[in-house]
Length: 446
Image 1 (tube, rainbow, N blue to C red):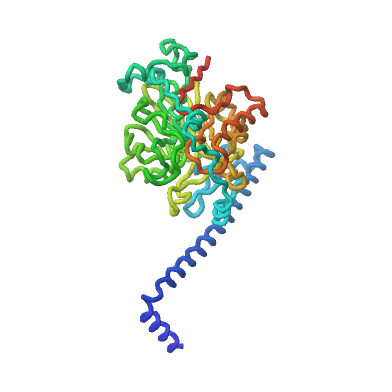
Image 2 (cartoon, rainbow, N blue to C red):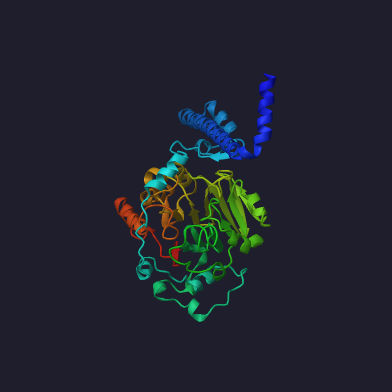
């Protein structure tokens, strides 16, 4: 036996340089096996947790005054929740990774990804005719005069050219700015993807910011179909930024550097350390169902982080190390819901029950084909209409389309499918719209 061991050591010593590829292959195989085992362990723990939460909720529904109420309170103690529904849909972390606590979720495998790439349709119907693209995806100048007027005096007024403030034909039907009661109005300006500039009772909100031409670097990642209708510096200064998750098309590092600590960043659990790398510390991490108060200009706003069905990661090594979420911002009388990315899941009814009716919901309607691959992580327009109804939203705008093509549907399918879904479910034409890029929409609540 000792002779065999000695021979092995001698062979390794003499052949090390010649067997580097073998060592690398062995290391890769070992890491693959480790990942497979870890994934199976996480999947097993996830399944057990989901079943336990379902049982707790069922028992609570059957016997509200029974001993199971104590069990629910124990299960929710860490999250400071005492509601059976929020316990069932609390965030879930296993083995240092966040996972979806929803029965309908299915993790994608490498084989799924490869099969999707191999069977993808190409082109998305994009025309090489630039004029056709401009007709289908027109850029509208935001109503800067309205945006400036809706901002509180704490923000310095931007010096604009007269034509930048003039009301064009897009805004001819809007009321005079001087006649507006900002405490009874919400504005929403879609910049592209899930980036919106929203104003609520004097609070300036920026959502999932990205203004760059490509998602990752100036030379890497999907390219915008149309330029951004305005730049960050053109808008009134935000008070808060809501970041639903850390994917490149929802979180632009250039915006993080530009705004820095001049705003308050509301982000899901696990993202504060990423911001700290850039010297940004005005960051509030939030768990699902957590509520906090933001005070600005003497006014208080409630901000709640609510569940979505998605995932996170900016590279192959940080997958699901941070959470993903949606946000509800509520003022004295008005409220805005920012969804981010999600598959359809049952939590939105609970959000609507707790916080509805919602003045304006910002919901994704793109990146949904093929459904077998996308349905768990991205809703389609009909799902968005269902969420609109679940939330009890008075109005909704459809975003996350017409900007970066990262799925297989025709680039103009989202607004077309949204119109059909609204007609199918009896929504009025103006209740849920797919906005034009850059157009400022005004919602007045009497």
